[in-house]
Image (cartoon, rainbow, N blue to C red; front, side, top):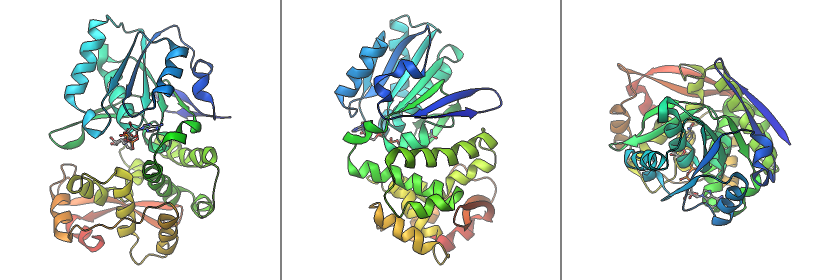
Length: 328
Ligand SMILES: NC(=O)c1ccc[n+]([C@@H]2O[C@H](COP(=O)([O-])OP(=O)(O)OC[C@H]3O[C@@H](n4cnc5c(N)ncnc54)[C@H](O)[C@@H]3O)[C@@H](O)[C@H]2O)c1
């Protein structure tokens, strides 16, 4: 078993990686609070039932699966349910699902009565290695991803790698894109080790250690944390223009474009091939550039991008927006 502590200026919380931990949730999070569980229809019912047996939640809110669930309408629906059930401040919300459920539940927890506790039980690889750590919560509005959100850290993150047994291969690959990204920006040995088969719990732990280090240095995403956006400027444009692609698939394309002509390009190619992430992007340069130009995050005429100096050594560079064209 590995338990890490995510240490932040205002708070800290335990994160456990342990096969079978979903069968002993209360070992990893003790409270007198009652629970409300939030999950989605894609999480296997047997998993939902197992957690319900242990936590005996006052209610379980099961939402449709998919990105469109991260909406103001769903937020409204959840708060209405909490109010109808007289759910008090001394309640812990349980996010049981992928990044969609984690981001949404975190957002509800951060706003309901100005903030209540929540725990994360991530069930996808992407949510285990990325979205359950770091306290970013969000919903989407008017087709803008994550435009309404908060920083609100979970009280505990409980990762049971066995829950991945039912996850479709495409979603495993989706999470692997973020794992490869973490390795490229933060750990050269890990990047090379990924060329071989690594046990999943080890792979999760090594990726999380990189994210943990970055988040602890820059919890509010003001500078260092931009490293986690490696490949993401391009990925966000692709995601908006190709809604059928998953986030990690777009990140894979984004990383590949950023690596053009760099020394680590061959390593990246080998990793993308090994983890089924060689995705073709049919979008034209102009389409991508026009989308990036209109991305609301861009201030003035510059853009912060995360580049790789050597494998395992990411850095942030401020460039003129038009200079992104050379990567597209
Ligand atoms: N907060 C952050 O720091 C952060 C970081 C990265 C991504 N995100 C967000 O994460 C979201 C994507 O997360 P995701 O990739 O986990 O997608 P997701 O939450 O949509 O889950 C993917 C699919 O897998 C299904 N599923 C979940 N667990 C399963 C299991 N064990 N077995 C079988 N099916 C299962 C879900 O029902 C869903 O259909 C995006 O909204 C993105 O913005 C947030």
